[in-house]
Length: 288
Image (cartoon, rainbow, N blue to C red):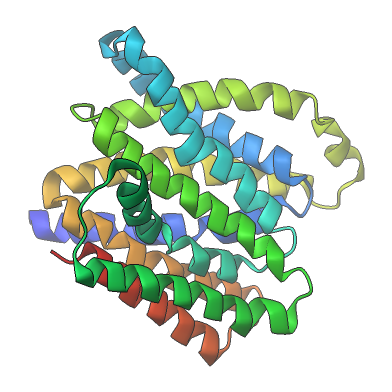
């Protein structure tokens, strides 16, 4: 098979996988608490990447483990819980749209913490992205949902993602994505396990209407949305380059909106225009 065709296949699969994560969270929350869904996601992802963990842990210097664990907290652990908490009150489509703000935070933290240089175009993209998020809240949250502020949990999660990108760039160069993800997710699974066990996880199977469907959605979320997707993303970077791989950011919210519409969520034209504004800001931030 032609490598370009394979690259586009992986690209589309990543958009579908990551874009479906938000509706899978909603399905998991039908029967479980946000803390249980997030814990199941992290544990499932850690188990899925366990073979890679055993391979890479021997190659990882002990002095780097605290930084890798911190990267895991920022890149997977904390956001997993924040997203699930947010989706108890907001639509999965809105969560997918807000998630697209991550590259803007990466630039912002690079400027504030590491004094990285930025062009006027990137600063303009930063401003446009922030305006787009504010308008998105106005278009969806404040006017139609008294719990609009739960969307701020998503914004905080994207801030964690952005900070993690900067952290990895400055302190974890030389380590492959697969190495970092498999090692960090193992420790995230270890942290999530007691949270799940102490949450009376079995109660849902006695009282909920569709616990097995929610369990399946949460496990697929972890295995596919975090574990397998990370491996695919790593492969796409190697075969097509980081710039092409980063374009997944643009396809992900489209899939999230599609699933939201199928689930009966309301998505209006104004929201789509706000998303276009955020994407325009992200484009200005990332454009070489």
